[in-house]
Length: 552
Image 1: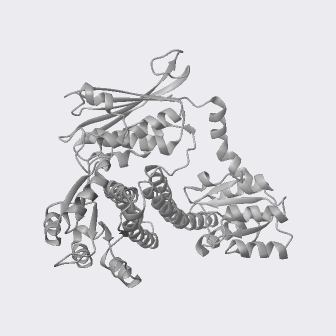
Image 2: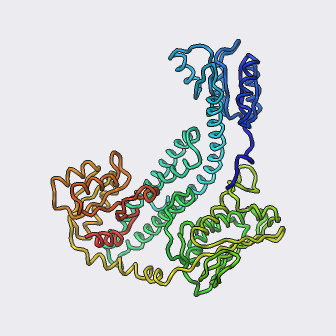
Image 3: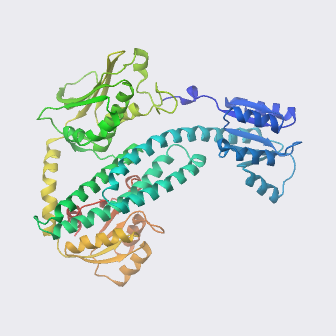
């Protein structure tokens, strides 16, 4: 366990009161928090300190000569640097509701009445001080996230102008939401926001890819339009890959280990790696032709390679070389890596950078440990790679020499033979499912008209009869009136009633009616314990047919 409390720097807490005795009492009450307590006996003294230093929390007496607490708070809020600083009023007199309202309008976030309860005062100051720290962390993470989203959004703009407009709207909404999140939540708020972005993004891609696939099936192989449709489909599929990267970055992606071709994965992300490394760093990748598949979550492995590449880039400020390779190895029992005996693939990432000394190398994988400057690293990149390797049944090793470079070796278990056969047969099984599925009466439930319209078209291509409900309540009404429905496909995230709740209500009246959950929301797996079949947006026609065939 990493004790972050021992290494975190204290923040400034400003105490403003014209009575020295009260300032001393507040200082005694708050001393055990370990923060930097700054006392000011007047509004002018407080403003002078604020102009020179950042402050996490300000405690202000309401009644002071010359300039009262309300006026001081208003002046503080007018300064751009302190528009979100926590201000707590302390009052020894009874305040009316209008006084409270005036204080909140001036910028206060809380009130404390005299006599002050020490435990209450410490608890409130502790919360706002910690929120201040987490806000700064979120701001640093948000800068990196916005940079990566902007790069990939520029590529998607060529595919569809409407998609670009919607992404820009969501980005603006995300930035507005973050301003509130910085005041109310901690680090995991970033993941929630990204999950919401991915949900809307996946809905857009669902409509685009679904319509493109249906258009592709209606034209001949020699039709001149096919080249344009195929190009648009490839661009939209890159958008789907972007969504997965966003979810993995925010650590909201469901872990789904599967057989993965390491060579193909790294080749597919080579453009991203080259853009990340920059023009002064050479990327070299080499793999044997018969490299075995590994059992790992592909999104997490991709994120791990990206994290290691970013670390390598930062270690080569003057340029250099990054080499990625892999080879199969047989690991025996009682090995140094504490791996289970068996077959593994060792992925090696080597850079020609500055390297690390022995002391730094020992702490390299500790959460929150970083050698980068303020705002340039969170200290979580390498620790997340360690976590991914451990969860996948593998291990990681690091070797480094100052002035020579760093080598990271990642061991991942080889996929079982049965898994490889399943992967090889998936495409054929999914394709044949379209022809085998009988015509059904299907109730589609989705609150997004664009997604619903696309899905209806896909179901009709498969020969099914479709009825549409825009909410869970409407779906229940339609099921009461129509007993001929063979299958329900419902979106998960809907206002009023979620898809999971709708499925539970359907079971109460029609326990044998199959229900499929469809969603592009990242947290579905964590929230859903119903065991219902799932369709992850965006899904293709063959995947839709396969799921329907399995249910009916």
